[in-house]
Length: 137
Image (cartoon, rainbow, N blue to C red; front, side, top):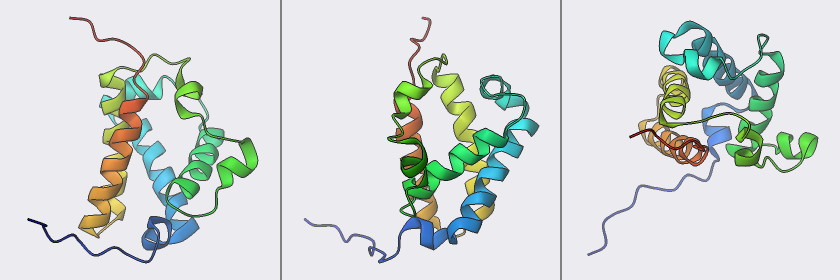
């Protein structure tokens, strides 16, 4: 049988979370958590000491990822995420470290549980796709 589907919003996640200001807040909190959390050391070490440029690039990417202005594409071309992350050795521990920072930032900012679940699912799929290092048995 067909199960009822949740209603589809006419608004993009970008609009639902509050637009540019909210995306910037999310990015800032994400990188603050990366600096604060002990379990984020592995992923923090993959970033430069100063995070200003990283914050800008993630903001631009998330703007388009959430359905807002495609700033990353306009300013830098196609994201090619996997290719751009290939110089870094990303395993499941690195993926999980990144996700824990993003999930906490999302939990602190987004109240709509359906939207929160959808965003976490999208981030998981994207982060999982970045894995480029085989696990040791």
